[in-house]
Image (cartoon, rainbow, N blue to C red; front, side, top):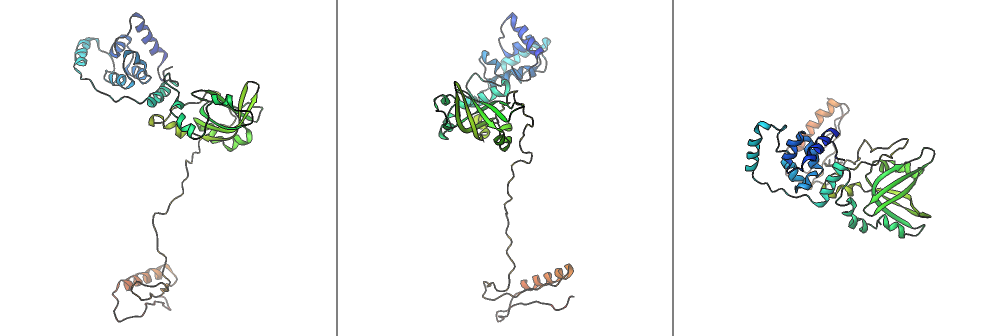
Length: 317
């Protein structure tokens, strides 16, 4: 159940607990003999909640232990621990607790993740899975949830998707043509919205999907961190999709501006008209003439001169 905890380490902890309940994290560590990393995995999974410790408090105490218990210095360690001052740790939000539960155990006994998103989903006109029982056959609807299973029988051209929210589950049918058009979203999203038509056959309700929306970013907002969700083992398609390796393409925006060359007809702020500069062919000649033009333009003009500069060499240097 706890991610990363081996069966051998779990067996040691269970065997040590059989004689008497653990009084503290240090007591569990010394009696079981498991490494500190194993207790850290249990703390991440909120296994020490029965001792009256929150997830962060348990992690704080576990990381204060040494790599291995030393019986010879056990009494000294206990005296040192008794002198350690209490640290007030900020509690996690309820949404963050649910996210951590899913991260380390793939389930949560506190609440379903979509419980925190229901007001936003209702604002967008998205109904719950249980509400489908009251929707008439043939009506257009949108339902959203976490993907549990994707199934595509090899001999058919249809994909079945099962999603779940805090009220129950819903089944969606996606035909081959629509699946190919939205393969990346279907195969890489943790939470989707299904827009389609309700189909009733006896007591079975399906949503014939017309469009699939990716609501994974909305799911990421729970607890203000990444939502670690792994789809079920039924993702058996012939050619599984994946996110586009090129990433999100963005058009480059010009952050600089080059003024166009003056043609001689543009008015000068001083009231004069600037001349037309004609450069000869050849990179060397152009470089020389550009330097000359630069010097000319930087030179001060006489107040009595109203003529325009015009440099048009008839022969190369």
